[in-house]
Image 1 (cartoon, rainbow over the protein chains, first blue to last red):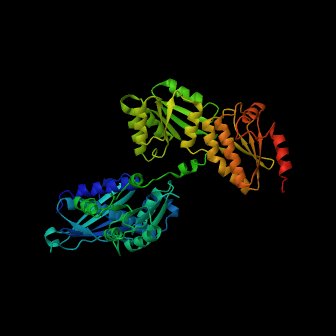
Image 2 (cartoon, rainbow over the protein chains, first blue to last red):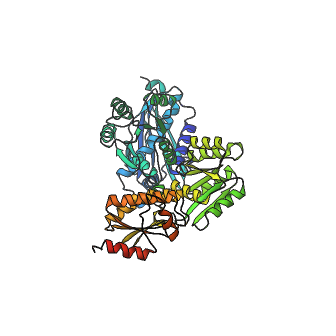
Image 3 (cartoon, each protein chain N blue to C red):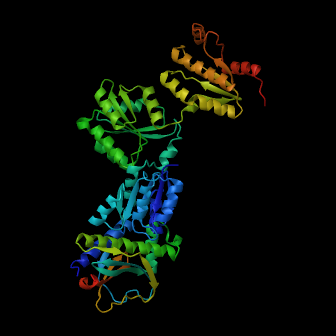
Length: 160
Length: 381
């Protein structure tokens, strides 16, 4: 559907974390159930248009807190769990998907983004339903992992 | 307080990042979480610039911008659009909306400051604080001249002051110096080869770190063309070579708005003393005049209604001295302040030769003047 989705996601993630957090993200192999007993926080942004789907950007609660602290120039202890972390993770997902959307639009695949939302919970997993493609990518920085999970509706179906 | 910057974004995170980016600058940050709130704040506060998110609930950035442009009182406010989408079509759509600039998320804080700094006058908080520096406070001065003798002349001219003079023979060296420690003021030779002095000036003005630093041009008196070019570009002032000590100190002092009043005005035993120094000249007279009214008014406000003009260090009464004396006495009359003069026999004699000053009475010393003035105006305390 998108031949170089892999490369697009890697570029978007490394640019986002490098620019906003001065953090170098490295692509690592996906390990099923990695750290899944910990509470995770996912920023979720959908896109609708010639190509439709939804993107989950998730990580452990502790790393989400650190991302928030770094983004806002605070100490970890100053970050209020809840709204502050949710907003930061939602915005991270929004910026990441925004970059992907721009590249797709330039290729003649226009779409619009939904407002970001946030999901929290332990034993986190994203299930793919029939007729939807799922792609998961994993990145690591300083021992912390983030996952980018793409659910894509095939192009011919999403056009209707 | 500097410019008002309104950030309109539904993400609290982005609003907090914007606020943090401008933390070191003298400005006021206003926040709104959607277009409706943004318009309300804009109408109430009249910001100098608006940073506007494109995608927001309730009222998005495009709609808010359209409403701003339709309002005659708000349409002139420059708007910088923030967007997570950098696609060609999106950029063209934003440009058509009439924004001044746009920024794509993710962005570095330095970038947002740089872009806003191109539109409104941003000054770092430290710059604002420096305005109240005194003439005898330490300063860092960078002199960019390929002739070591000039750097040495500047050093000699500023001997006795706690000012550190650093020399740079080339523009590149000056840029390196500024990237390490930002000087308080820079003197650039206008005759550097290949217009390097002018190119350096433009580079310094383009950088947020150095855009507010006063820059003086160094030029030979007769080099009118390069002086005109420097003035046109916006050099703070021109110092001519050979360097005149008083002229250099005065120009640095004015460029940095240094407080020099303590050199001339002193409070002593319930009176304000205006001390005119031995090296009195037109530059000193201008400097005294700058502070005169404020200092006398401050004294009156503090309950001091007597002034002594001490000319005892001056050898000759010239027109500049007489004009300053007359202005000061006029101000005293206007404010109801009693006054006395202290001066040498020679100055006293010379003053007898002018119609305007022939009735000036001089005391020999401050103590004598104090006694005289106290006799005429007994203290109320």
